[in-house]
Image (cartoon, rainbow, N blue to C red; front, top):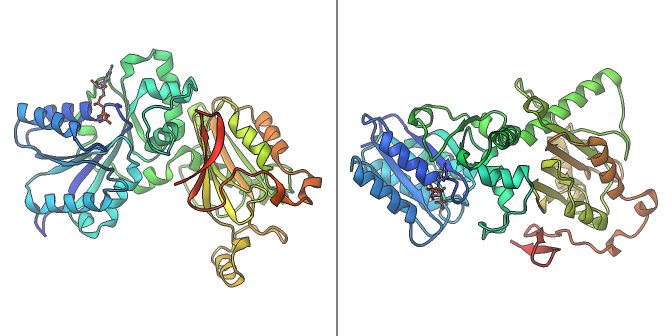
Length: 435
Ligand SMILES: Nc1nc2c(ncn2[C@@H]2O[C@H](COP(=O)(O)OP(=O)(O)OP(=O)(O)O)[C@@H](O)[C@H]2O)c(=O)[nH]1
């Protein structure tokens, strides 16, 4: 039993989308784990009947019969069942005897949220240490979504598009298990690996079949490093890398960038000694920054037909007619989501704006438009940077449009925090949904 004086118990989190092979991997691990270690398992399932827990339980009964399997069903431990998840693992630590905990998250889980529960729940953080965040990837599905650019809409009954979920699960992890490699060719595998490395350059990637992995690389290895998993996403690194390049250029050339001109990068530059340009991983990146809003109509058309060399894009957008809010652009594979990121400082009440700006002395501020801006980063294969830049520039308001009444534009973009813009493939139309 874990007591007040014992060392924290290492926790390995297995995430990955529906059917990626998490249960198969877990069963393989339990069957082959060292007998010197008692493993406790928590299996989360979205449905009322936790089939995965049953499958794991059966495996355990067939092998050592020692491992305790706890189920959390009918919800997701990263959101609806987050409190219950915290309570359950604390109770486990105080009532059962085991050396390591492996959590199989549901296919819809965002591993970042699951990890945060372990961190934020003070009692859980007392009893446990995050050890490894593993994302199991279905190589064939990943290839369809990110390399072949096929529309794969099934499997997510959630508002979040599948490609977005897949990207986020890879972006927040320190070990990728590329499973089901038997279902794709060698060259497809090379493409899949390069996209994965671009999405998360700092994680280790292991190719496996049928979940056959050496438990020593993911159980009780002390791999977890918050910076690697939270700051390691390729788009964040690309963004930072471009910022630093520009900061350096600025220093040497004392150059200034105007509206609609060359790329502009601003805000806070952090010291990172291990930034990798995505180019190192065979992908290219593009940073696109402008201090001029997009025309909603033209932007919607652009988003509906994103150049297919783009694998991932993230960042903030300023859309004419939506002056209050910075909008998040979240593009993964073929799917795009736009939601509200927060309020521009420029639209805050004066006192709030003052303290916001005081806390951010590096914030770029335009006399007329304040901090409103477009700041996007794209990663993909052999990006045609000029074509992307030019086509996005065509979506910006023209000088004449800058003087129009933007409220009169037809505008499908969200205007409230609870709204998001998604493409409904059934009716082939963009629409705002309330989340
Ligand atoms: N061809 C092939 N099939 C695999 C492989 N790994 C797992 N499978 C099969 O894929 C299916 C789904 O595997 P699971 O382990 O249940 O996947 P999961 O991630 O736990 O799925 P959910 O619990 O639904 O999220 C099963 O039928 C497995 O037998 C693999 O490497 N190759």
